[in-house]
Structures are given as structure tokens and as C-alpha cells.
Image (tube, rainbow, N blue to C red; front, side):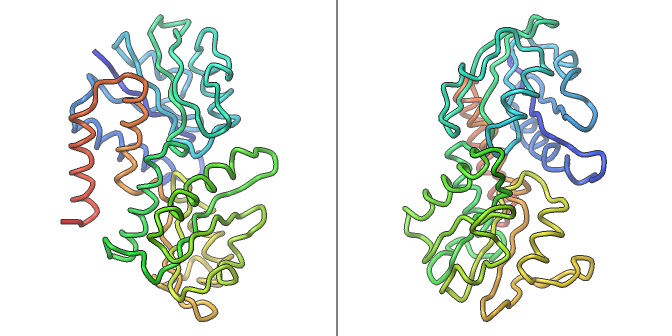
Length: 290
């Protein structure tokens, strides 16, 4: 039998950080495709270093709930899982195309299918769009709207921006929204100036973050001018400089993200076709769609 382990960062300071991981694990568990569905974290329990010891199956699919390829997916997670023979070249990735590598965990002997992060999978594009539908309450949102896909951005990891640009490009090519931009917190073009980048009156802002936390709940709303103090809250939409800003919060909290986790496992050989259909159906209901 096959088991799934979803691995994420977690946080000692923000109890909401792990909430999406648990939610998506519950959704997939209920779909019944795996003998067991486990979670493991870098900053919470169960820790990455111990999680495989809690899994009884000999064959395990490990899916990182991270936005981009980088330090955690290429170094921390393989090291903590003790994947024998791991080398980032096994992914043969250009920063966006990490798929999977099959290795053996040295201390448990399990066969581990180590997958690329959810954030760079093509199915994540659908989650970004679904997030826009959810925040506006309009399953056909697009015409007359601009869409900003927002990332952290950092000059220390060029892959951080690649994922943001990848999904913004894919959505732009569909022609669904009048304008689509990739914006960042720590590099140009910055989300602080969001209204300067759109001519559309209505702009949906979707942060490509896995969980809501300090950046998505405090920094970005204040940086965009939705509020002077995040503790006082803000309306959705909020009018800023003549634009109505529909701020969506972290894309990772969207129920459809469970589908991306399954797609990653499927790409690595997991038999999850029925579960994919179940999750897509169930997340449509969870999002209030017909």
C-alpha cells in the first residue's frame, strides 16, 4: 500500500501556519487513495526528521507544501528525511520543472518518491484563479478585472520569482482577466504600488503563499493601503486610489490546493485518479460553487 506525507514549514510563532497543511491532509484522507496520510514540519511536530518513522507503508510519496524550489526543497527536506543518494540534479530542473525522484530512506528502508513543490505545478494556476473566484464570489470573474499574483521575492533565490511569473503568464495567456501582473514584497515591481500597475477599476490580489501569517495578514494589507493598522481590519473590497482591491489572502488556504498535492503524487506514480475527481468535486462544494 502507498502512503502520503505532506511536508511544510510550520511555525513556532504562528499557530495558523500549519492549518492549511492539516486541512488538505484531511481532504485527501477522506478521499481514500492512500493507506495513510501524514504531515511533517520543519518548525513544528511531528518534525521532518521523525515523520517517516510514523509511516507503516514501505512506499511513501512525499509532497512539499512549498511555493518554490530552493533551500528547503533542495537541502533541508531531503537531509532531514535521510534520502540516500539525493542530489538536486536528480530533478533535472530549471527552477520550475522539479518532478520527482525515487530514493531510499536510509534509516527506515522505505521507498520514497520525493516530489517537487506544489507551488510550481501547473495545477496551481487553477488554484490562483479559484482564489479569485472565491474572494469575489463570482465563478466567472475576469472581464473588467485585473489580477495581481503576489510573491515574497528575494534576490537570494531567483526561483522565488520564477513561480510567480510562471502562473501570472499562464493566466495572462488565457485572456480571462483584463490585466495580469506579477508583484512582490521584496523586489520590483512591488505590491506597495499595486494601483500604479493597473488601469482596471477592480483588482484581485492573490498572494502565492502557503499559509496566512505576518506577510499576508499584516504586511501586504498595510503595504497596499487597505488599512493603516492590520489589527483594525479592512473591507473586501477596499477602495485605494480609485481602485477596488479584492484581497484574497494566501492561496494555500484555498481547498482546491489538495488537488495539486494529489497531482504531484500522481506524477510520481501514485494511483490516485479517483481521489483527484473526488477532491475536485468536494472542493467545489467547499468553495460554495454549484
